[in-house]
Length: 108
Length: 114
Image (cartoon, rainbow over all chains, first blue to last red; front, side):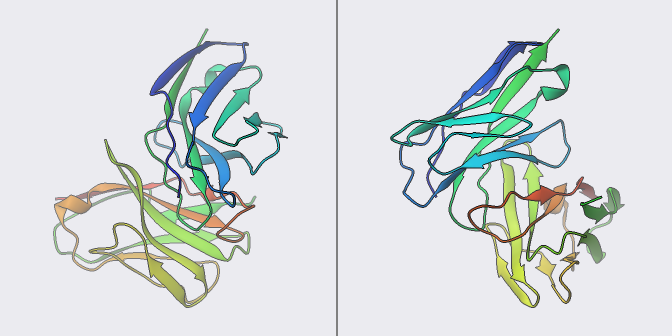
């Protein structure tokens, strides 16, 4: 599975959009981009995934560049409850390689 | 409510005393998996199962056993626990292991082996 690179930490003001970047320059054609988050020591929570097209659900939007070498997770109106570690995962098989993720701190 | 249920949430045990951590899902998912999470090492896969009676090793299987006798349950067995198995454990399930489907994780089991 392709490796991903994320910034270790980011801050965002409550109510503003949080844009979390992820680089996956070695992604191959059949690999999906997944985003999960983990709040404190709770179980990771699935957020969204995509292959080529941009995706949106009730939690977030996923923007994937045309060459698929990077993506951005957008939380449109961040709340304090969105403070968590966010993991970008590129995967085509069974195991999820979580890496270190981005620790997002949403401040009042 | 669709969920993955792990028990117990917290467990302190002594070296060498066999234990089982249970995992059950109510979503009729085919795929189930166990992960452990350690500071600085992130989440690592221990074992996974693609369906009943089908299990395979993940990245860190040593010292663990699993079984999948029925679709909903996937217990993690530590035959002779050691202190290096002190960790936070998560069970996960998915409709299928690849492509479209997100994984649902349990709330975790914090195990301490003394």
